[in-house]
Image 1 (cartoon, rainbow, N blue to C red):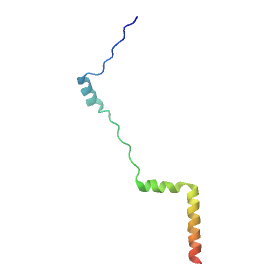
Image 2 (image 1 turned 135 degrees about the vertical axis):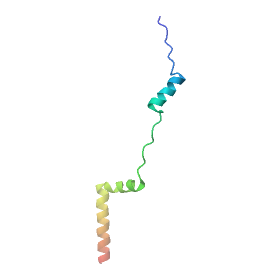
Image 3 (image 1 turned 60 degrees about the vertical axis):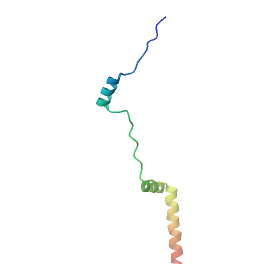
Length: 65
């Protein structure tokens, strides 16, 4: 029967050296989209554009009459 191998992690010195070379294991948070950009993205939908055109046409006709 084979003996189980006991794996150990890095020593303190190895951890310090690894952090010095590669940096800390920290993820950078993703950049947040500005609110105005999120708002304008809603108008990329073709149905929304059609509804806006219809609303402005209706408003224009109402003002003329």
